Image (tube, rainbow, N blue to C red; front, side):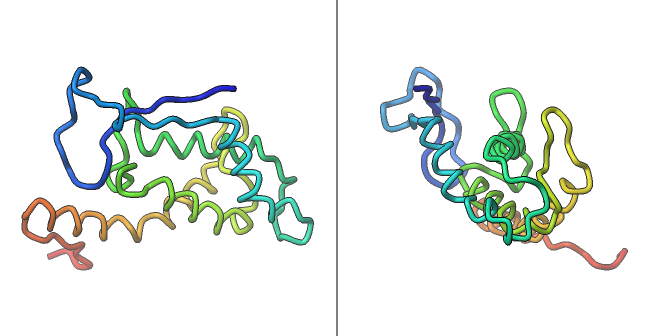
Length: 155
């Protein structure tokens, strides 16, 4: 069995990152990769049905590849996250729900081995965009900064 141990901030809010020596047992989460694989198989099983409207042949490994690709958007030790896709604010749930809604519409998976399908990825990002302004408004309130808004004109 393979497992991944993750350390990070628990809960919401913008707190200063902890020093590695200050982590406690509660700051770590254990992820069983085989359990994750099984959960994806259950969650996405409706796409295995020929009448699901899904164009490509269902492949759980391809869904996992897409999940790994989506995880790049929430960052890691070497890459910062996309600003409104903060893992502490539920970005993975948002992306998976969006992905599940779009999978039959996009015509296939986001990735194929090391190749990204740009049109599908663009569709995916376009469907995440409406949550961007909401994220920054909430963050502005949390940080007591003046509310910013997207301007529809060139004022």
